[in-house]
Length: 173
Image (cartoon, rainbow, N blue to C red; front, side, top):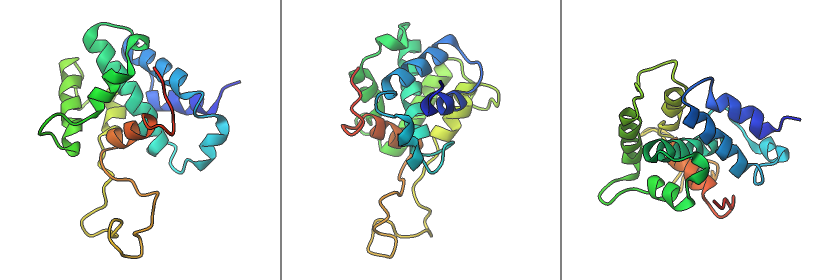
């Protein structure tokens, strides 16, 4: 029987792509399966672009980048390597993290304008900045929307990784 994680993550993964991309998704599914049973998905409001999609895709993309760059299998990538990739470098801001990842994707031969490369298709979603618009509701102040704990802030890849690497999810690898 197919689980919700398997079903959705195969959509997030896309068709084709490099073997390392497919292996990275298999590893991400293996790591997330114990933390994300089918009942967990009933809270997912946006199955294509929400925090769960960004978390799984962020993890798979991190595993892919590290494995492809080092010539290792995604199963041999360690948690500290992913943590390091997810953190800002000295003098780097959080919104600049996706720019560093994009440079690495380009170095691996990905055309960031491609509409057929599954790595790039998912990347365009992950790099989306979910911060509120300048004229949007005041989620951080004392306005009526200040208590919205479901609000997303920052690039999807950063938000997603922050979530899946949090103690609440408890990934150990």
